Amino acid sequence: MNSELEAGSRGIKMNTNYMRNLVLNVMLLLNFAIVSVLSLTSAIAIVKISKSMNAREFLEGMNQLPPVPWTVPVIAIGGFVLLTIFLNIKNSILPEHFMVILEIALGVTIIYTLDMNYSGIIFLLAAYLMDYFRGEKRKIGLFIIIGISILVFDFNICEHILPIISFDVYVQYFNSMISSSLLAFINLGTTCNMLLFVVYTILLLSEKIDENKKINELNEKLNSANENLMHANQELEKFAIESQRIAKTKERNRLAREIHDTLGHTLTGIIAGLDAAIAILPISIEQTQNQLEMVRDVARHGMTDVRRSVNELRPDVLERGDLLSAINQIISDVTSTTNVEIEFINHIEQLIFNEDEEDVIYRIIQESITNSIRHGKATKIMVEIGKEYSIMTITIKDNGCGSGNVKYGFGLTHMQERLEMLHGELEIESEGGFTVIATIPIRWGEDND
Picture 1 (cartoon, one colour):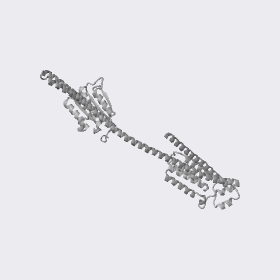
Picture 2 (cartoon, one colour):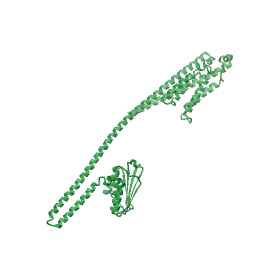
Picture 3 (cartoon, helix red, strand yellow):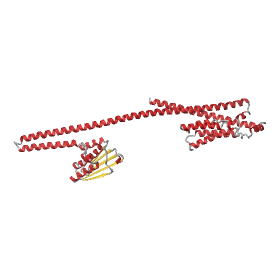
Picture 4 (tube, one colour):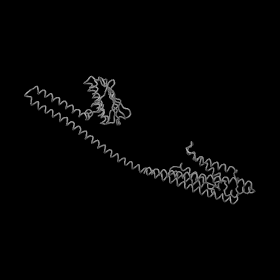
């Protein structure tokens, strides 16, 4: 439906432009015909006067010398041709205001050459210059200029000031039929020129009204789209809050179930084992000792399971301090209890991120260092943190034994799952030691910009 309306609007605009161009072309041809008739008639009449016996009487009645015959059509017609070229030049190398001044000057020259007998060129210039006078105030100024120009170049006013000759005087030197035809053509042409200008103005105003209507329609659609977008954003925020609440609930329930199952099973085994040990204690100390050792093994396995479940929670070291302090604490603990040398290189001035990002960064470094020592038997580990644009890169490289066939166990799988939650990626290299490369699209805070 919208596409049909837009197509219809474009069709109407194209038709309006076509009509305006057609009116301009008709005005151009009509003005050329009028200028040609006036200038040629004047030139022929002057020649007739100079060859007639009434030349002296003509000069005494005019109190001025008529122009050289050939100059009138040459200046008027030549000037009009030049004016037509300038009016139709698009994207001229000359400044626009200079072209306007030049066109107005040519129009005044033509009117003066014709002894103010025709000022319809003013309407032609006005029609072409309406695109230059953009804006409502400037267009009002243009119409004021048109009105003043019509008064200034009116023959009845100018004949008392300037040495000009009426066209009626020239046509008297032709026979009555030609004289009447010439006057009728000039009068009709002048009237038609004014009517064409009115039609052109109406078409232009109609086009502007259509454009304003279209702009208003687009504004209404934009406002409606903005309202819909705001509503959608509000719904999305509600959905995000609800999703976060559900995720927290699911995670809490998962941990509760896992810890419940682990502790329940472990405690049940411990209680059963202790009961058995109490029962056999009077009979055999050796069997009692064996039973207690089994209870100890059950307790150790249970502790391992509990630690694995609790490991999903936010590290206590991050709750008590910042990320940089937590990383330094890991390195300090490892180097104080082992012979491993750890080098930490940080290219980021301040490691301040959202909680979920800090948790993932901390766990990746913790798990990677643990794997390097436990599985790679490394003696040197390098931890490097850097960024490029909005991507943070964590690289943990060791000099351990590496692995020809890397298998994703619990640690690496868990690390990859954490990264996927932040739309990050994990890359493993095992040549010349073991290298973990984690890239994370961080939501950088102001302190990291």
